[in-house]
Length: 485
Image (cartoon, rainbow, N blue to C red; front, side, top):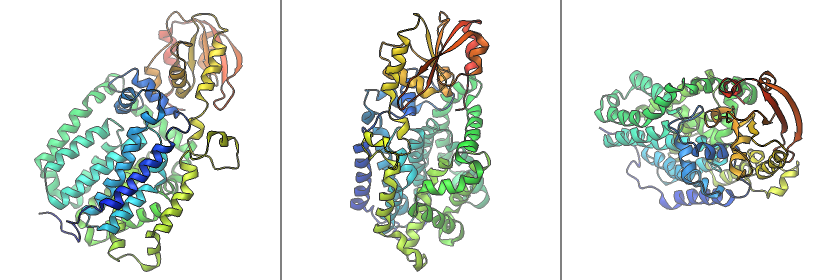
């Protein structure tokens, strides 16, 4: 028998929820062409031109999307991100509705989604960190709806969406492992007895099987990638010390962070949410897991809509303390959005980025200067002997040269991240134009390495000419492999 809560059969607050979703989508669409391709987007485009069932650093879905949308326009490439972020607003509100929330709770949840630092900022570009949280939100809505209705057909959809998530990022696997443990511990255990849940698991398994086979055939590079990310988080994000503060900041201050904390607390403590409590403990388990392995703080983003929805329903019903109900007011939401925008989206003209006194969008430095970078490399390449190969230390650089090189440059290679499996220098290339800080492998396998100047501009990198290769590329190329930064 399903769970009955107040307003459980209420309709979706269509007008305000779709207004928020539409405004968010329109904002993202308006700024999506302001600068240029983000470095990872250029990589997805390059990977899409080398389609495979898997890559060293990710499953195949985003390279496939990039291949389908490879028109040369950032606006077109970012349409899936724009649509997913806007649709996420609606599904977050639907979670609130399934939890018994009326119009106010649904609108508060939709608003929290719209002013979330992580979701708004990454919604600007195509990335696994954009698509994956949206798919988690859909999965949570399906689970919460099943708890209320006991419609087992929903579990088949859960399996299908889980399969999509697994082909975007493998993180959803951690969700299901912890969720099953929580279900066994506190219930509702009858969910695990439903044949269609396991049929849905079979659907997900079939969908993810090709990329798992690819991983197995290539020595499970995703495991090594996880270790590289852990090391990066320790050095760049401040590691475990700043994990929780960073996660709360990315949830959105003050609205998102406070609602997440309150919603999770009520989910774990209140008898009202007993049927959904396993999802609260799943959230706690994921936080502890990602903390333990030095995961990126945004990995938990997919669980935020559930916590926002619980908090919004509690606020709507008057259960929250009076002293902080001011949080769920439109002036606070709008103020949060206004504070967030300059650092999250490219609202400034590109020419303003030179002014260091203005707040710069977080990812702006990785969206500008790629055509000029390519022009500089091409000018240098014209002075080199024919047949010289191009190798870059960082995968963004090879991806940019591949995209903007046009017929002026040979296909570049890089040992960085998953680019290592895409291309390698031809056997006939005895000289290499190397871009980036030189790796030790250059001195190890080339007789001479001399500087050629720098590319200059926003993507300034040193250039080197390595000549006199001493070993065949079959021996040399594996030494360039580096899944770290």
